[in-house]
Image 1 (cartoon, rainbow, N blue to C red):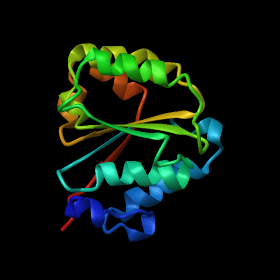
Image 2 (spheres, helix red, strand yellow):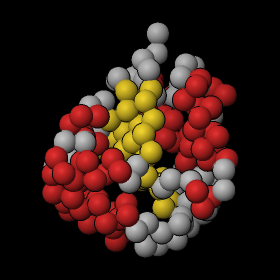
Image 3 (cartoon, rainbow, N blue to C red):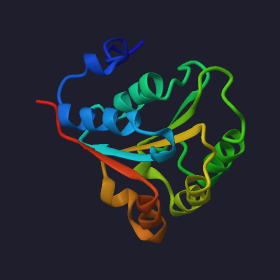
Image 4 (cartoon, rainbow, N blue to C red):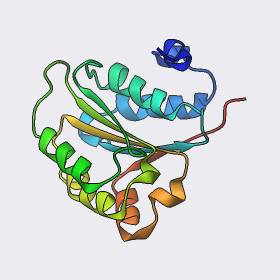
Length: 164
């Protein structure tokens, strides 16, 4: 197992830095579940903790089971429309364990325009148990084009500062 995975924080209490953003995230998810956004964009420099925060939100705040209900997809490897079609098919199913199903789309700026377009309908008409986290180091590339702009209107954005 990689060193970063061994020492990756598992809770918000373990996190270092970005305290204001973490507090805002906790406040956002503590409100009435009907008002909580189901689509999020977490962006910032490499190593700022984007994917780590998405995983912590999934386990701590959304009560997703890490073994069954958190799906992490790296779009540098799976960047096309077929990946999104698979997600659309899977998201209809209720979680095996936990209350939520969470899709963490890592390196989201690597998605093709067709893949971003294919995400528009699922992010608009999402089942109550499904959450998306688009993690990116290049927000402008993710939001590029009409489909990127539309994705931004369906998302809550969280900017992480570099860890010093």
